Length: 388
Length: 158
Ligand SMILES: [Zn+2]
Image 1 (cartoon, each protein chain N blue to C red):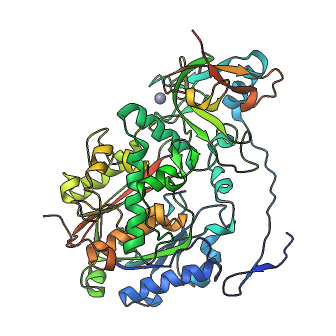
Image 2: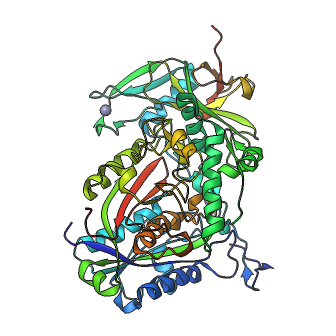
Image 3: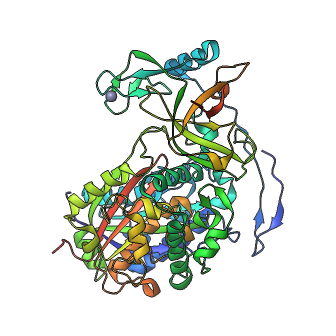
């Protein structure tokens, strides 16, 4: 990369099931103002904007144009990025690319969603091929459920293993994250007793849909150092798209796109022993089952080792590698913002600004995005410009 | 677009319920057309085979996305295969589902195919479904040239 890039500001809304107080632009504006405030910057410092949300969720066609009232993009270059569930992480990566290229010094990345304005599942189904799989895929739940059926059959994982992930993430949100949408503590028994939505997935295994926005400010090295005492440096990124047909090579039990994206990001950052080198992880876990099955793709355990990792408790807040101190996607899911929230939360951790959810002494963090036909984004962040 | 105001938000802001109706006609393409024609006319399932990696695509593709090469070779695959995984859908989303829930969906690897096929499972109770079981396509009596010309896959009793 031409320029080193650091995150200097992070802002988000208080996420809700239905944010009836404001329209989309107002929601965006709240996150943008909070991000600028956190870095003590003004809109005059921003050279370019990247914004993203899901197509069809609000049925706003030119979001880059429509959002100007809230994004502050008047007379600035704006790029819209939309890549399904990874929209937020792709928006973040695009912000990073803008600055890393040397063409822009300070870039504002915005992810947002006013999910309550539409029928999320019907809208999301339009991502599947209309003449083959669309009718059968019915949103995001079925494919993830089918993946866990395959994983349980292959590795002997159980529905209780997934429930442990659900409890971890819900309870982190309840205890530590005032911005989270769902803030109730739950138990494994409650998860197991919740009704099946799509076997083996139950109601409490699945993410909600939320209204909310997130904004993250990326800056070149000099600007970043001048702006904040401890920026969150982006050490590595990886993006991997895969095939459109769900039944073809998405990885029935595992997640090859995440494995590839992680390998690329780790190589760029110099991560060789992820479990030891990461102090904290903010992972796009859209269903508790994925919190079991995708750990091996990130190199956090051996193949099929997800259940062992989760049962051991090392990924809890008091464990060796806390995962999702914010409560993650299971507690908060304004879809176009969800991936950017992972990057923003990971940045706050290494900046030492995560407040109640701060993992003590966190210096190196990983954030992921997940979407569409099982594709993945990975970001490695650190409080230092390079790893020791 | 009919707009009517209704229902107050929690700080008194208005909501505007509306609906966008957009008709579409999707093109099945060359490979997709032949695939559906064969099912409709002969109850046979065909795929295409990549000249380099040998992967057999069902539904067929004109290009191998793995190698980015055009594919000319057509191969008939079996109407029976192995169930790779499944789910039992219990949530209802009116207008976009093939049936009223509950229904079972599987990913089936037809004999001779490289990729799986997402389809319904029938003539079996949900609790009897197992990963790895053998299943066979049941075709509709009257076929129209679409994905549901295959009614579902039923367990294959040997
Ligand atoms: Zn090929």
